[in-house]
View 1 (cartoon, rainbow, N blue to C red):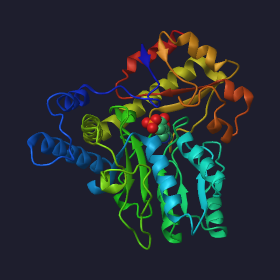
View 2 (cartoon, rainbow, N blue to C red):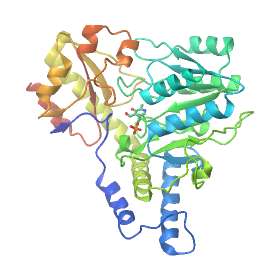
View 3 (cartoon, rainbow, N blue to C red):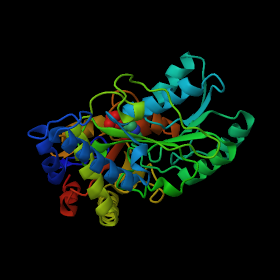
View 4 (spheres, helix red, strand yellow):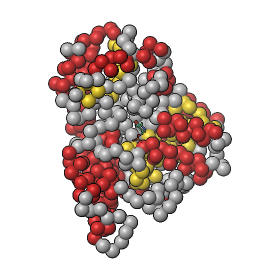
Amino acid sequence: MLYLDNSATTQMLPEVKDSMLPYLLEEFGNPSSKYYSLATNAKNAVNEAREHIAKLIGCDSDEIIFTSGATESNNMIIKGIADYYGEHNQHIITSKVEHPSVLETCHYLEKKGFTVTYLDVDSYGRIYLDKLKEIMLQSPPLLVSIMWGNNEIGSLQPIEEIAKLCAEQNVFFHTDATQVMGKVFTDISTIEGLHFLSCSAHKFHGPKGIGVAVIKKDRNNLKTKITPLLHGGGQENDYRSGTLPVHNIVGMGKAAQLAFANFDQNVEYLLDLENHLRMILKAKFGDVIVFNSDETKKIPGIISVQFKGINNEMLIKNLAGVVALSTGSACSSSKPSHVLQAIGLHADGLRSTIRFSLSSLVKKEELDIFKQL
Ligand code: PLP
């Protein structure tokens, strides 16, 4: 079967699996234990993985906090800032196209008395910077949380410009970078106003159940403190207690090392695959199709397409034995997509949209299957 649902999850690379196996079997020590080699071997492996992930993100390794994935990272960062600083400022700005792990966290905080501004987006899913600036001046927020790239339509947000605004106004900036790791240049070392970042390993050929929350060291006048979600033994600088899943961390480290080493080659390949798929779809379906995202300023390999007059669920079900596709996000497949609604699609557009999400494991000739449908 041709797997084209890589925004939902990716296949783990064999090198990643091989790197993990020793830590599931003979190297089973707890990295927080001391004095004997089983523990120190585990600790060294965790530290090495931390270095690889830090290199991919362009942060220091002690700014990496391991979590169970981006859902936890988003919850931990947004609730953690709200709890730590909420007495002084209860305004948060986010966008209408965020992942549910950001939106539902914001809804929860609204019930606790916070005010959340959900920014509109243009027809390609990008926020309006002028509007953000206007709202920031009118009612200075505690936190701006805007995703780096969208999981349904692939659009990229102007992260550097948002970070600049946040730095000028002394506001915390968090970005959900889950969909861009290994596909977009994510070196945050030069992005002065970016304080927090979330991601998950399984979106870039690592294992499921492991992710990272980046908490940058204090910058300018801002102390990047958060209240932890999990209290306990004090692992991860006291930000996330619990015994570390060494095998998963090692797997994420290996996936990050490979994503970093093969970055240029992977991006070039994804762009080539995407162009090939666009050409096939245009030739086959002509005027029936409308691309929901533009061809630039988007994540390589994610295309969202409306097939006018065709029911997306029916098409996907009919193809299920041959090609794995989705209508959009895997988390909210039963509800109409809030992302597609935010970019202005109505009932027919919502019912006819299909997301194709590619990966470097897809072979170009495999896409020719769409010529025969
Ligand atoms: N953020 C974005 C943009 C995502 O696409 C996803 C997963 O689809 C998540 C967060 C949540 O990731 P996880 O399910 O690994 O916690």
